[in-house]
Length: 484
Ligand code: ADP
Image 1 (cartoon, helix red, strand yellow):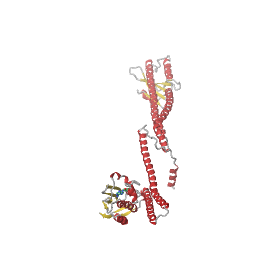
Image 2 (cartoon, rainbow, N blue to C red; image 1 turned 180 degrees about the vertical axis):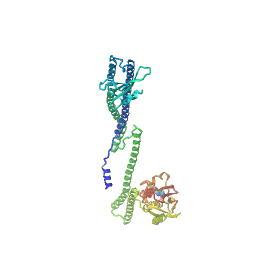
Image 3 (tube, rainbow, N blue to C red; image 1 turned 90 degrees about the vertical axis):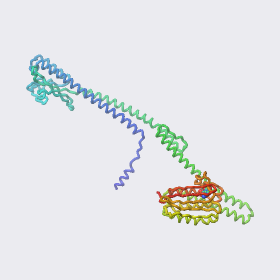
Image 4 (tube, rainbow, N blue to C red; image 1 turned 135 degrees about the horizontal axis):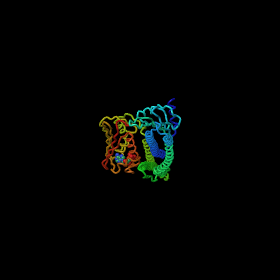
């Protein structure tokens, strides 16, 4: 149940394909915007802090001046009667949108610019500390104000503290100023964001151009124009892709060409015996009174041609089977000596007919994992050729040997040999060295091709050693244990 649900979820997941441009645009915009936002934020914070700091220093200085003036004029002792100091205190409080409170020795408020706490007692911690000579200043972030307490000294030589000046000033003005700067910065960021998006889109378009061009060319190839020039030298990557596709295309063309060649060879090979049969039959029919012996001779020729046709068809079928996957191999443990012995027994009548001596030498016992039918066909082809392309009174030596990894079947003959220039080509389908002789012996031109395919299916190798007039030696080397 759980697995079923998992499977369904897996099946339902849509196949989302994103254009390469999208992540590139997103990344470029992100990399552009993140530093811009961070820088603006840092600048505004430090701007606000420096404004606050300078305002605090300014207020401190003003308070110091006021406190000294109070000392000098004996304000706290009531020596100044004209109210000029009160005006000054009020003006200072107004300038900083704040409140100034003056407290005397008895902790009683003698001046309050808000006029709400005069004559009241004020025993705050800052005030007590101030009377002990410790001035204090603090900033309240939540309520946006700044408070400062400064001692007022008396004018006696002892310099005792006769009062405290407490000022609270609002910082709203500074915050409003930095908020305006912040709004402008956000507007600027928006413009930068739009410029970045535009720049990223243009950059991506330019970046992807070589890929788009390559894709157009590949579309043409897909539509069938295999000869389209797909070179794309814009980037190393496009160059690599186009080179890889080019190699694949040439391989496809080769396969296509060899398939066409094969089909035309097959039709030619199948037509040749039929043409001979037609010529023989037509000439018999063209004769009014042909003697019986001539009839018999022509009919024997027709029968030979039919044998050839059926041999070509059999070989073609074997070859088609070999072209299928290796999974079609039916691997069993086979005694190679016994296998070769059976083949020789079957071929002995043909060898005797051509007066060719067949000799088997088994150097050691060999059992291997092979497909018996296919290997038997491969070895038969070699021994049949050794008999066919031999000279009268000749010999064929078959040797079976093995080491710890491979077994070897060597087929040596005393025949006509194969020119060195033809060694590679004789394994091609329908390739014959001496066309007339091969046809006369009933060869289809497919035997060695079949043998090579069988050997390759067994992950083995086939070696040829031959010289014209001296004979040929074909050696099969196949692993004792089949490698899947
Ligand atoms: P065929 O059916 O013509 O024998 P094969 O594929 O078996 O086709 O062989 C290809 C060609 O290789 C033959 O036509 C022949 O010319 C040459 N050949 C193969 N085996 C031998 C051999 N033992 N000695 C000389 N020539 C050979």
